[in-house]
Image (cartoon, rainbow, N blue to C red):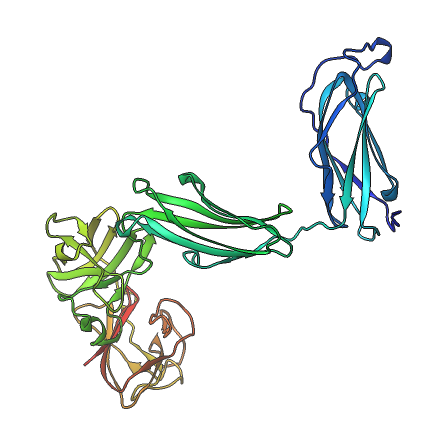
Length: 467
């Protein structure tokens, strides 16, 4: 069918030479080597495309007498392109990789076209092949839907809990799927599912066994490929470790393993959240109010089921084996920094001085509410007084009462008789039970009762303890 083109055909040629042999392109000096026609092997004789997309006509050309030119012709597409190799190159080419790009304009009409590819050698002999171009191509990638084992971008394989893990994902294509894959290239893991002909949807469900002697971080890839070669991929980071890498870690500074000790005596603050530095590595800073304070680390705010501490069988080392855990003892009344690695089973404890209190010389109080006697939001000249702890000038305390359930919604700020907002100040974030986030998501419901509020200005940690 004759194509009606409303704009000029756009041509793009990428030429690459596979083998360059020395010869002579001067016709007067030309002599046949074998007198045979060129050999033309096209990568494909049928290309499926769409208007507006570039496709490539590719193949390999060989001729012992030397290649003179390549012509690509299609009258319906107004294509008549000759690549004069004998002009482009000073030396004759005997092998050549064709890689010619062509874009069919958006407003082209027609369902199929034939492009004739003709190769001429230096002796004038030719070889011809046809390439069928049909307008039923597909450039849309399949859609991936991860599920089992793939809902988080970070996956932790804990070898002590088993070396196998099940993964599942589904893919859907607008035309036809070819295959699905799950791979961990660095571990030479590859699971593949070939999809039945004509199917648009498929699911790969597989159990992968990870090698028990290779810990580290690896890339896992899920991949869906359709019959047109369109690829959809998603990468995951897989941490293979001897123990689990916990996202959250908390410090407890008392004896006992009853979960009621974690939930029965406070509204927040027990246990105390600590910093996760990197994989398996954590840093805690805390205040020991008396000599020989016992501390341990747990992974849940509500349970001692996973607990780390000093190893009674190997003192000075960290362990998570429940029957071997004993508290790490902080020997003095002081601030401490504890760094530990759960996979290596190591920890260090260092006492340090926090320096001059940042509230030194200031009187502090609550602005906000809504406990009994709260002053509301009139400003820092109308506050609910906080008391500086005589044993630790970095700490502020207050006795609070809620006659009925209501919110705790405050800013801690210095007194100022003139009503100016001074520094330092802290805004409570009820969602995260913290004064450290500088957010205004501040409301936290508190049941009726009497409480002791404690705030450490150095650690920026608070507790609301039941009385």
